Amino acid sequence: MLDLMPPGLFDVAFAIAFGATFLTGVMRGFAGFGAGMALIPVYGLFWGPIIAAPILILIEIPATLQMLPRVWKAIDWRAAMLLGIPAVIGARLGAEMLVELPADLMRQATSVLVLIAVVALWFGWRYRGRRPATLTAGVGATTGLLAGATGIGGPPVILYQLSADGPVERHRATLIGFYVPLEAALVTFYLMFGLFTADVLWRSVLLALPFMGGIVVGQHLFGVADETAFRRVTLLFLGTVALYALFA
Image 1 (cartoon, rainbow, N blue to C red):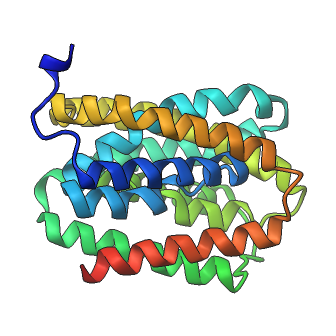
Image 2 (image 1 turned 90 degrees about the horizontal axis):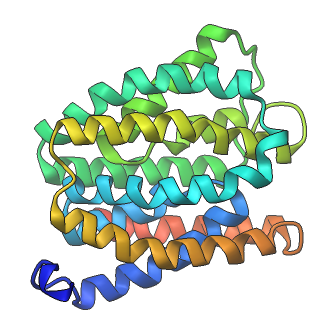
């Protein structure tokens, strides 16, 4: 089996990515989001965006399936589908952008996107206006476009969904449900463009292990750890990773 692995798989970059993936799994398990914002800058720095994005989606799928049963009853499926269906359409165009645009441009764009999201979340930006179906669908389409092109689709839908009225547990659950159709679409489109190479598949299998383990830890922390303090530490982590990836 080891003979089937691509050469040079285990190096310093992989070791760093392994540790970052576990920490990100803790964050994902606690908050329900944020994996792309943390891992795409790391993976993209080491391996480039065209490898980073497919790896992320492959390790996110089992994570979503792992978390789904625990939040199923709390999901607002109408909101999840109103966001999710347009996201599928946006993801198709985004996947083509990932393939066609220069790698350095995509890496820098992802870092800037993460920094904008970190600032907005840190200062507690909230959308308090009306939420017609067209606006919700637009947020979904934008999220899908960014997810397909950069692997980071979270910021628009996170900022939009978590500022809605109602309990945070419901919004967190709806975010998890929203990722089901989006992740299925991303797998389909990345397959169309031939992005699931042997290198991507092997890295995904190996990095899924610390990610899933971190999610278990994060789920146990949810409701126990101080949410405000955890959020601050998470945002500092995301901001540091994005700044390093931007200027490295």
